[in-house]
Image 1 (cartoon, rainbow, N blue to C red):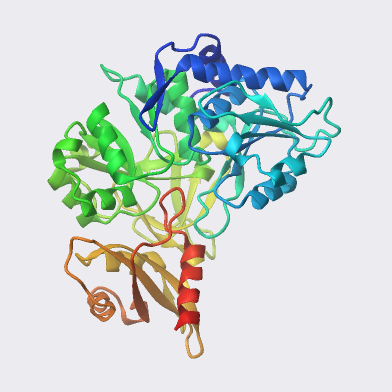
Image 2: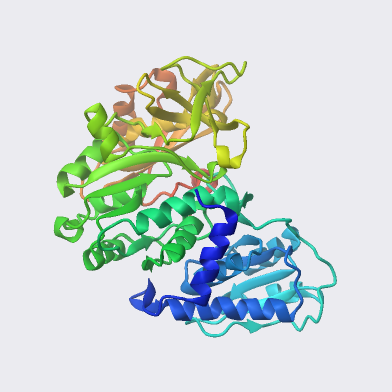
Length: 496
């Protein structure tokens, strides 16, 4: 584990003695470590000139661009707190977020300095603009002195954003000490190979995974290929060009590779992929592994844990004689997990289903309660089965959306599925589903899909209706956006 002081010191060394060669590739063009460090030092100068106190939170409008990555590295290297602002929203909402978060300093790329954002600076905020191409950052608001300290933190923290699957992304405060385990693991892993590989980063920099990667790879001085957003052909081309031995994936990435018939020779350098951020069915794992000859190691983590809680590894598979379908591996050394009764809070025995709780020492001694329904088997393997807070009450029967979605994904034509509950006059609530089909498969009808679920689910869990859509709505983490899915369902109802 890396302490907060060690992380700051290592990042500061990056600024003072940056790698002179390539550091970040973006849209086919490399930026050097010297260029990244220059942006970071420019921000430091502007903050010092404006007399910004060390405890004032620096708001950063986050984009997956080298300019934003440089800003994050620099601000945290200064030991200053960072508050992330979601960029994929209307300019008026970005300005509104700045107001609600009570930020005294805002760092944003030139494209995000809308009239609304400029107006909200007023006379007591400082604005810093990041020009495209890693040019020198400029000061926007002529603030001689911050009239109010506004949002402050007594230590170096990073306020990351949640994935926003059920609503707008929310800020979660994590100390740099809490992030130390993840930063250290990534930095150590990046520098462990005989020939350090180029790391691929497509997850949002505003997320726990994104910020850990940027900071960890800067500390390890490991080159990275940064994507504005995930696009399967660009991703596969980067694998082909940079030839990494391993990389991180999500379930939608695996499905996109299969659905788009990515050539096996493009991925031939990959020996294993590590993933999480959602379930991946056993048959999809097997199909991917057999077609590409790549070991799939699935895991589970959360922003609240500041990283990964459990994962499969090649070593664990060798120990247990293979994978366990629909599981996420064993809890990592030094961490603890237990299953409790959702109503009584009592710890449950092996293989009993209940609420997942975890204890992560670098976050404190308390058990962290999740809303994930899970079980742990006799070998300590963790299974995530659904969400306690997402259960649909169908006339007294509890229906877990993820269990229904998983049954739909077993159909060979279904690339992905998502399930929500809608009101029903007789039963109170019923499950309904939207599915995305593999383009390469023969057509299938909604009724055929409902009939298929009857073979795999108890009758209360069979969706009342299935709709086929060209593409499920997703957020920047490639997770299905449940709020957007519900809006899509309702809009189709109104048009019917």
